[in-house]
Image (tube, rainbow, N blue to C red; front, side, top):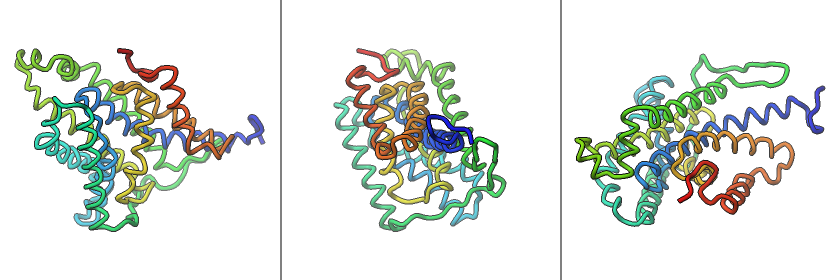
Length: 295
């Protein structure tokens, strides 16, 4: 049996794979946070609630309408994005000119409201959500055993993350978004509908959380508290990567997921806090984050 640092190779690669799976969710969720903060300057504490909404939307589409996994994967994020757009148009936009603290408090209260409402109607226990039949089973090699669905999660997350990065950094609409964050009045003077742009940005960030929720539903049970269990870790990931840095959110999400997985092998007692230890070190050495820009 091949050993590395006294640990069987199959155990090591298995934990790396688990880290990549967790990192896929960290990257997707922190990406949505980075998009919203980077372009709207809103600390969206309700992001975990939108993640939960995505999972529940997929479960409801299956439970009440009989839709399968693949239609739910397409429709649930759209529904979550529409909810996000409605919230932005009716409430959140009133806070843009105020201190960031007001946006944080509003989204924190919104998260509590959504979580409490779903606990009231569906209870605190989780709801099962089956993975698609064609993605059940495992792929076995000499070094690692990978459940097919979990491998799909990693691939889907990579495609969505880098597709979003390309959209924001390499397209015309992305250039409008970046310009609007610098000088919204000037951009509007050139005929760009900035309020609509901001609404679509918030809706898109919420939809990314919804996608993560649908992908997570077959792995974790669909429950009202699934977002609150994740959001603190996601904020730590965003801080390490750099608030508002899209590439930083993606890279740090995967990196910290793998670090967390390896910590479970070499020092299991620290696995639950290693991300926060790294965050503290990064804040001491580079307060803007690994990929953030110093003011």
